[in-house]
Length: 249
Image (tube, rainbow, N blue to C red; front, side, top):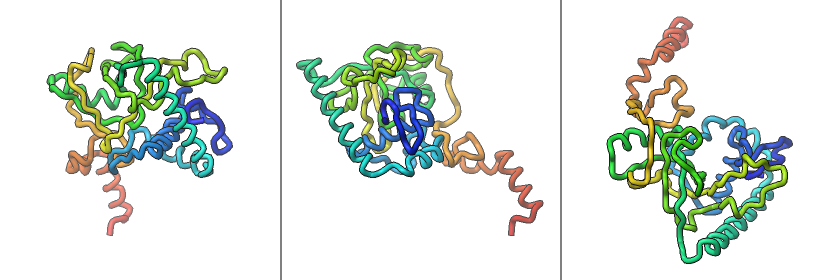
């Protein structure tokens, strides 16, 4: 269900690889992965997509039976073990494979200035499960940064060749995806700059912070620049309105 879709709370969800609406498939698969591998994130370093669909996730997962979660966890564990067997058999004599990822918008925003400044080590925050491929290129998915990593087998959750795709799965969805685990408690990945290819990058002056519930009044980072939050025109408008209505004591 988490991967290909299925019935959840009397409604169909699309699944992680099948146009995952509201990221429900991703969230479920990530929860099971965290349980299976004891992956924990510090508060404030949660995955970016969770704040976007918080209400949708609460609604969808509220009636999910614990017994079904345990069954799904066991299925994921079996799939991981099968993936490990496949990797060791297919890449005999190796303990890792070189794969690539086109960075998403949040990741690119973090690395842009670092790449332009030619920092020897680039770091960025990202999700717990990352989609890589062994057939990827700079500019794929219209992205401007391509990361190439040598990933140990035990950090690979699922390999596309280890999946049995349902007959209803279209060719477009059968991408050469390899799902990699990010176990860092801050969600950080660090790689030498030589592992990055880039194009059309423009320097940014806005400090990175994932937009979430704390940024309701402003797209600026209130934790980095708290004094400017009170200068935001929408905040000032609400303060003046409450003053007129006598809402301040």
